[in-house]
Length: 466
Ligand code: GLU
Ligand code: ZN
Image (cartoon, rainbow, N blue to C red; front, side, top):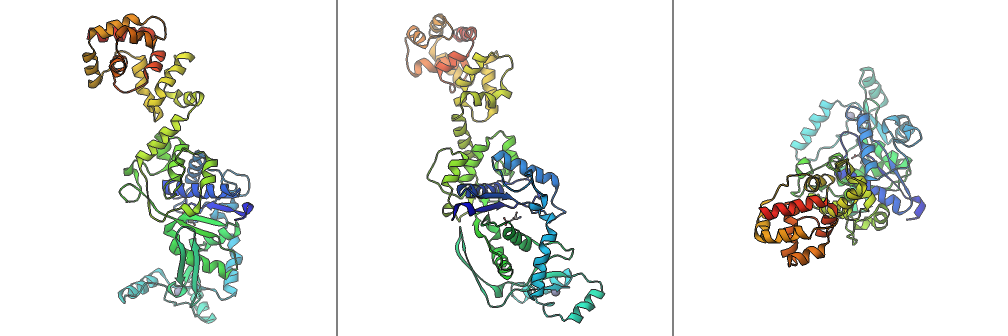
């Protein structure tokens, strides 16, 4: 692959929200382009006018940008929208229809939906795979005129050449072969003059000089048709790689039932885009690097040879893992920005910083911090049962001694240890329980540094009186 020539694209049909499966396809294409310092395009396939809505295009761009995927050609980039909006590209296709018609490689078909359906049923009943019966393949000029005068509006069908073997090397599935004799003449232009998917998708890839297409493997069966079309038009086909389906843990199509299915759901739940990308990066793509990667590192390690054929399973617990890896790497300033919406506004800068230092290791989602705000800054403290037990078992003496040893702020851990005469878990467990009402949570040192010293003393006294 020569470096400057790689052009990839993501070509969604904006008929709904950005699904995680499609987001992964977009990520892979983005990374492939980035890896080769190439170009990544966002082409909106909105020829299905009824189902595509402008608001969905906006939401789509929003979701992709949130994930950190940006494009060279597409919405929100200067340039005519006909560069990327398929519904505005109709006139570009005209010369290609013309060429096919003139070469006898496309013909008008006047069959009605009803006629096609009946033919299909008859074939199925005869145990044959349904395909276009060829009814209008050989119509003479006068037969066509006769149908036109009856007011019939034709579709345009591609005349599939007989006896051809179509071979291609799929980037994921390897060598593929199909026989043209198994493919019926297919519609490339609808009655209303709009292009069908097979046609505009393939032509646009060629016109946009796309070199690599990674897309869902539900399109694997469409590829032979598209290759035939490009061949007939003497256009250069891209290399195709068909990426496995993304499912839930149970193998069924990903849906809200599996925790989340769309990018918006993950964003609104408070996930970091980098965590989401790290998960998607590893779904159906194997990599030796198990650390949280940034976009450049992902691009460097992305390899189409590592795309897997088997369907990939989305697992909410993996997402949580990447999210906590992301949190673990936050520096103090970014952590503060991230948690700001959940912090009490009246905290002074010092308390705020030491509070975040204390609780960050116990936070995965930003909202988790609410619990710790309660624990550190609100009374009365709510005790979990285990913490109550730990306090009881430590005994009143322990807490009286500890409280008496609290002098300056923050209290000195060694002095507390010496005063209570205990060490290890017997020392920090009851202290943590008395101060937070929990047996799991922040390290004792940062905890003592973040909690107001009066509150520490008061809670130790309260534990001693319990
Ligand atoms: N609009 C098609 C889809 O969303 C594009 C398929 C492709 O990437 O070629 O399925
Ligand atoms: Zn026909």
